[in-house]
Structures are given as C-alpha cells and as structure tokens.
Image 1 (cartoon, rainbow, N blue to C red):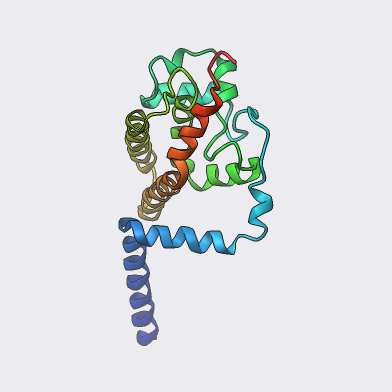
Image 2 (image 1 turned 30 degrees about the vertical axis):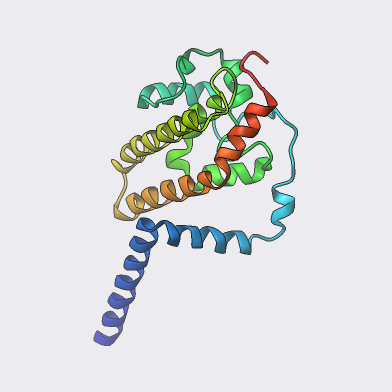
Length: 199
C-alpha cells in the first residue's frame, strides 16, 4: 500500500509539473492547440462559413453581458457601454470569428467561460468607426483583451479551489493564444468589409 501511495504521489507531482509547464510556456500551449485541432473529427464541417451578421452569442443575453462588463469595469472602445442594445447584439457573437459555426463558438465560450466577457468589447472594436485597420490600434485592442482577461480571472478565482484557479489561468492563456493565431488578419478583413455600428 505504501508503494501505491508513493507512485500516486509521484504521478500527481509529474502531472502538476506538466500543467505548470503548459500554463507558463507558449510553445507548450501551441502544441496542445495543435494536438486538439488534429483530433477534432470533421473539423472542416464545424467551421463552415456562416453568413455575416449572425445574432449575438447564445451563451449570454446582450443586456446581461453589458451589465457585467460595467460591473467588472472592462475596457473597450470609447462609449461602448452606452451603445444601443440592438447594435451591440448585432456585433457580439462570443469567442471566435463569424466564419466559425455557432456550435464551435459556443464550445469555446464554455472552455474559456471565465474570460468569455472579453469578447463583448473586443467584437465591438471590429466595426467602424473603431476599426481603422491599423496594427497600432489592434495592439490597443489586444492589450485591452489581456487586461480584461486578467481582471475576469482574478474575479473568478475568488471563489475557486486550487484546481479551479489553475484551470481559469490556463484556459484564459490558451484562449488568448488561440485568438492571436488569426486575429490581426481578421481585424484587417473586418476593416475591408466596412461594417459599422449603424448598419
């Protein structure tokens, strides 16, 4: 029995070291993203092109999202919290681009649930007049995502155990890594389409 507990302790120590390594090293997280993407069956069908301007995320009503953004003090484009509800509803689709199916976006919303609200101000940035297509403005957008993510993780971690806190930190970083894969090209593409708040 002593041998069993010794091996179990060694396994747990190894597993925790692996979790910490994955959490703190971008290449390890990139490798995990690659492994997951290779194992998703019918991935092409899941990310089928969707029509533009689909309804906002099914994960949370827009009014609730705006209320929580205000409560947590999330950064976003100037005046975004005062935009008409219908306008925000048209722009906010959760995490992931419009080209991904609602099924995939909803799954990502759940994996990154503690930082899900980052997507609301982030999505508004992608419309005009906020989106000017420049890398300089996109760096501001990305910086806001990082700060909003940190704020949301800190809030979520107040009521979590050790495992829950590690998961929140890991999933927030994984979501940001995934976001960075094609975010700037999506920013340029959105600028090219010229969608605006008033449409």
